[in-house]
Image (cartoon, rainbow, N blue to C red):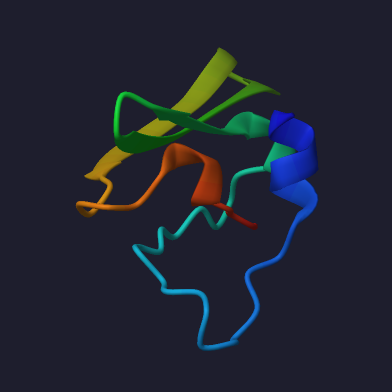
Length: 83
């Protein structure tokens, strides 16, 4: 179900309203998780890189999270999202 929704795209028709956008540049789509639960949309992304350098192993870790409450009258089933 999540993958099905993830593959949908938000079109510009007047029937759809944009609730929020989030910059996930630098994250692979499989590193981004979107959940719709309890009247909220939660977007999180986590990325970890490991590099070997002269000094040894180095790690780069990034995590972002955003939680948006659905407006009154909007059903969780109506929510679509795209990357």
